[in-house]
Length: 379
Image (cartoon, rainbow, N blue to C red; front, side, top):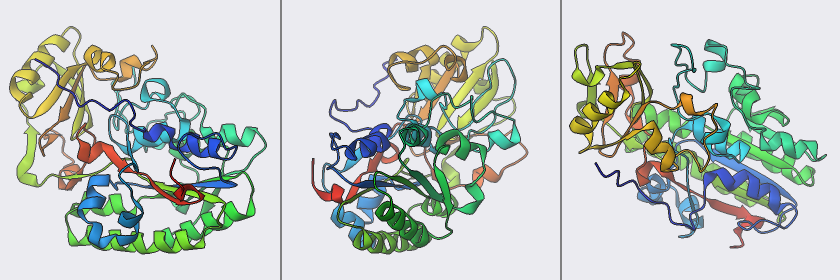
């Protein structure tokens, strides 16, 4: 089977470089952004460029500020845990180790999710995520860094894993977070301010990005970003980006893996997420699992062995030896608007999600880079 994977153009900008380039802009050395006195990175969870442009009439400020060049490709998988880990460390998944949403801890039968697994499964935020966060490195130079988010995230393991070193500032609404960020950037020369906005993603998962609820959330976001842009000091650079886009998958497009399904033969664990499975095989069964999935699913999904995924560079040019066994023996990334669920699980709440992401399609992987303030000058 030919993999026929999407190929990123050599000039494609990567979400992995956004915070790193913002830091470089403070010394005038960024290849992406104009020089700035301080920098703000706003991460809107779930706002793909395709989602934004398709609903441009409901986001006139954001769409109007977006040029053809203002795009980046997010990580593979196109999921929050992996994308934010790359954004905030400047490293690919093959180095930082967060190679998906739900992963097997090597040598165990545990498959914790990579957002809440620090609390539920005892993952160590100082070692499980393997790279030094960029905000911690920036603070080590004597500069200031801030993370502005909801109070509930202040002490989570995921926050410690990726935002340690930064001063955490709690603000509940998007408008409040953006106002706080603008004030911090204006008050502290050389500061980097990271702002996280999960609201759009939450609505998208529950109702779908094509829903009226999502449009209303987008309109509110657009209003808040417009006010934020108007408040920026002229020498403060800001960029609005996202971790992934979204595909709506209604229930009739679900692929349910039930007891006795031949696709589960030889599979010890089904992990990952509905549009990008990590399949962990029984000892010696990986080749058979790959063969069965390719025969059944290659018409609507990319099916790769671990070795093929690594060779294709999907987790970056280098996959460290410690990270390698975290990757499934077989990966299944949906091309069609489908989602795979292990229907043997008693908890069916995940099957109620409409908006999905994780795979390699442009809808999921291309995200906006909206440049504001000092960054509005093209580079």
